[in-house]
Length: 251
Ligand SMILES: Cc1cc2nc3c(=O)[nH]c(=O)nc-3n(C[C@H](O)[C@H](O)[C@H](O)COP(=O)(O)O)c2cc1C
Image (cartoon, rainbow, N blue to C red):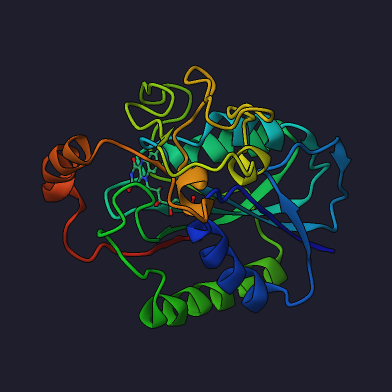
């Protein structure tokens, strides 16, 4: 049985995961980590593609928390970290540590680029056709490794345990503007329940992880940041986010 397990607030991680999953296994069950999941118990015959975005070079905390509801029991995991054209630092090692704690055997890993979900002008439109071709080639090589059945040798870049320090969501916490009609689409989709269900104009900034799903989904473009602030931050991040970054396979 194949599982496509993913945390993808704005869809970039999901698009990379879909390319890999369709090539790796065709038919599979989707598990969406943006929603609460109940305990799941797998077997050693299961193969799971586990995909997360990189947030400040780490796995989003809520994704780790939900992954910990899954008991691998020897299931094979293919790790997929999706980054927005800067870097992913400890994302893959943190994911590997969590999955191994949960009883998975990590067989291979991918780090792939998708459009930056805060600064959408960087890596815009990725994964594109060139990425898709490369990701399908990665999937074929992973499939060969899975068929060979020899695991336990996955050596990933990044630190184990001593992960880089991050602040939850940093300064990017979207707010409702005057266009908000309180339709509640943002509150319904928020992966951490940070937006008040009965008054969606209110966001709990201590809970918000700055994932941008509310900005992405709002049909009225009513969730945003101060334009001057965004311009300043875009300029600050531009040197690190520019140019075409690579996709990587670890096998
Ligand atoms: C809070 C936050 C932190 C991010 N940190 C990084 C980062 O450290 N490096 C990077 O390359 N991209 C970073 N990104 C960009 C995302 O990793 C990238 O856009 C990813 O595709 C988003 O996944 P999604 O579209 O599935 O939500 C960050 C995005 C957010 C919202």
